[in-house]
Image 1: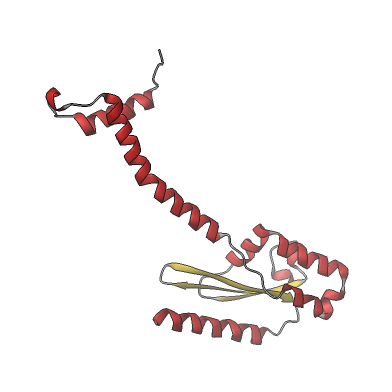
Image 2 (image 1 turned 30 degrees about the vertical axis):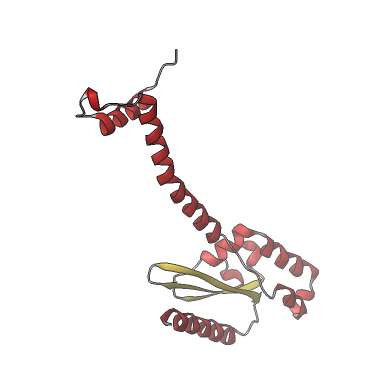
Length: 172
């Protein structure tokens, strides 16, 4: 014989009350196991799509897309083997990349030059980030990592242009 714990008894009590309370015995036409099974099946049918959606959101939230990293090695700063290795290591660390992209305020362009970066492995680089959101929906962050001597005005102009295009597409 199996002994039920307090929370299990409470769950069964709630089930019986919701399904059977106030019904005459003549209307209770199924074994208790069928009532329990139908309640469990209903709960699974309700909860499973919610969990699947949460999992999709969590997976998408951590997605990082890299473009142009190979062109960084054409820059004179990246001729240093130590600096080049550090750059590749930064790109390989997903948690660090997420921290970089999550820094700053929404709808703002943020610029971090060398020692302004919180992380030691970023002190040789500059980072420009732009978080874009529409209403309460975060559409993601664009980040540029490069040498400290990057053309900041050009990078910021490009980010403003991208923002404008995203907003135009949103209105269509």
